[in-house]
Image 1 (tube, one colour):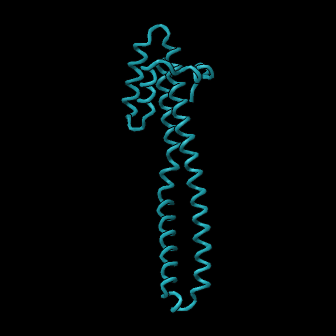
Image 2 (spheres, helix red, strand yellow):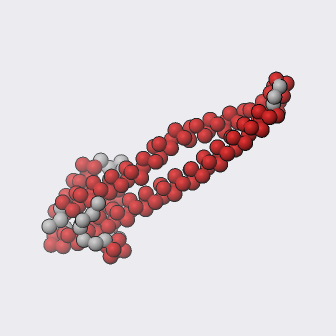
Length: 161
């Protein structure tokens, strides 16, 4: 992704310049079109002066640091989401088995308790299904963040001497 100077020190020191911090925030925002981000990088590079390579390295360090932080939070959320889905799936399975064993006749199925149990199971199943449908979008987010980091890295590197 980055073939420029090592980022070890830059990751620790990219903050401290308000203009750079604002630019990093603009660049990493997914609502910022990539063409607008590239133009902003070009403007920053043009104004960077003699130490442009150092400033551009710090800029990418900020982009990398912030996108990596976002990606980590998203992955943590996906893991939490997956745990909740597994728990809900286990509860649905257990309740389905219990209901099928306790409601073998129509009278048990039509009783007030039987209907409440079935409604609870139906609701849990619906929640599980809806969450499963949104999982595809949630899992694409880290990939989108990585692609943005790659595109920004290429653009920043292209502006270096």
